[in-house]
Image (cartoon, rainbow, N blue to C red; front, side, top):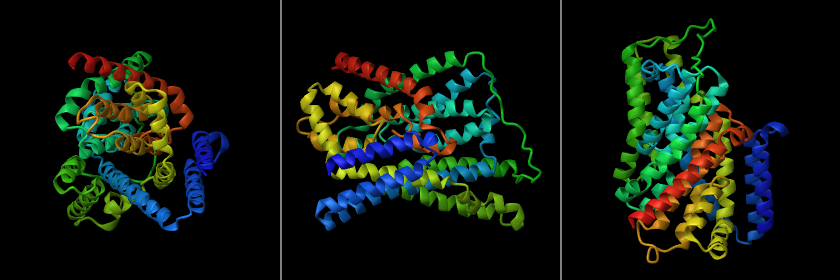
Length: 428
């Protein structure tokens, strides 16, 4: 059974990677893979109740991420419908792509630490659509946003789901993770930015062309634009605080905020006629969400869940521990593997392998694991939630990302990892 599961996962992964040559949508490949993996698991497990319990557990965790993604996307679409991003775009005056790249990289890096890498990617990719007309430019910027968002999420206890897992589990503390990982994470971003600024030297920003459609665009006042932008951004920024205060999962905070935004929008536009306000409503924003990408997210998460429940991932981690021996090398390998499969079950497996008695809070293992699992996912487009979101929003091809961005991400990953190892040896 285990061999069959691994073979099917690899085939499904290959089908996702080569979506364009085989002309089969990646969402279809992910769903077929998930269906086959769970079918094989159910038929061979011999315990229907156990499989049902595992599926329910996986469905709950998957649904939380999907609801969060839908809520965040809807909020961004509402802000966009009100031309809210003009609050930022009107203040960006640079005409050089390299300068814009540095600005976008740093904003994504710090915003990700406050929000999280997934929400930051959704907001920043939407913003790039307002700033850049050339698709090649937008794709390149989206790739750097993924690197920046994952790097920014690694050093904050609320910036990445794996760091949050370690924080809640008691493996790391907030102050120490910030002190230990800020510089390595920053280096993870700076190295790709230095390379890209050299590649983009002399290129100018090509802004979006004026709309050619004869259909009148919805007109919003400065008050409406500012209100919806700051309210939308404030809701997203309040989600981590909501989670800390209530101990409820983040998707509840996003859905609660979505309800607030919906209510405020209806009140603000209550005097307008239906034709005038239809494009400004949250109901219309929900129709603009990229559902195929969300379906893909469901398929890939459920596929990886079978590898977790059948202990393939934990067995892999145990084998690495025995075969490699060196802790720093093992954690770096886990980071690279997290580019292929979801980093959440990998970190969960590592948390189960190593006890807090043997490795106390804030020890080398846990901090380095937070860095590697958080930033290693940038190496491939489907290696992180941020990458999957960018893939859906900009229709990024897996092979294109591998050719153009993966090398930069790997270079940044290795630079930050080596810096952390040296930093830890020096400070301890």
